[in-house]
Length: 415
Image (cartoon, helix red, strand yellow):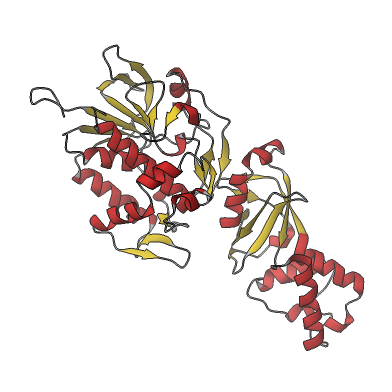
């Protein structure tokens, strides 16, 4: 605790994303009277949540075992078990409820604030920052950090203003094309290779024409004929593929896809069980509806327009009857259903979802406190760390966990 005659410690959090906001709120809640300033380069905090739409993965996911939760991370799975034990999804949900948020949990265990859009969530956190007396300074870009010989830091902003701070939390997002990257390196830290994660896959394949939205099934997707695969829901966008299975594959295989320059064939099985199940489906249709039109087939997992496009790719018009399909045509249809390949031309950033795999080298961070092992008084939180979830809810929990630990530890001056 500071003495009664000394000024309260000044803590600056750099970054107005989820991790930075939660670090600032946590630091401001400390009983030691810390002054907390939040710096954000953009004109507003939580900018990714200011556009229309929904939060596709919720704010967290109800997986209570830290070791199990860690299996849903594409990076940092070993390092994050301890932090998740200290502050996990249940702790964050309790915080939300203590702050009058009405939670709703979907069938996949993802927690949302009931009836809210992303903008409402951004405004909720904005109100909490105001109530906590956090000094939020938007349009404020950090240009340089100098370490004081007596402890603490001098911060220089882009407009040449300076700030004297006691503790510094860097939570300014992923270190791809981020000016914070140079600052981190100037402070003596090394950075791992960084890749876009939780992305979509851009494709102009004609089989996607006229198909849009989340599809109602569990699909297996893989990179060509490799073992790099994921299973789950997918969504078709105007530009290509998105959804949980795509986000997972883009994250777990970020290094491998980068070697391919993010251009590769995406192989999709539209039915569980692959070729065996596809052949069985055709046999069942032949047995039940031998004279039925192939184009009239309905399955909730395959939208009608997608089915028509798959038939076209298999050299079928849709007017054929099931009993008229020759063995070569059956084989062609099985291939479309079980192992059709869609050419991916690049990764596609998904607003409010996409993240970065890679960051400050884990050996240089004390994950018990999120403190730098190189610079006293320096902490890290969020995407700046080499820790990344395979879905947006999991990735947000990393932000809440690391933000809470960094914020609480930065205020514990005597630890």
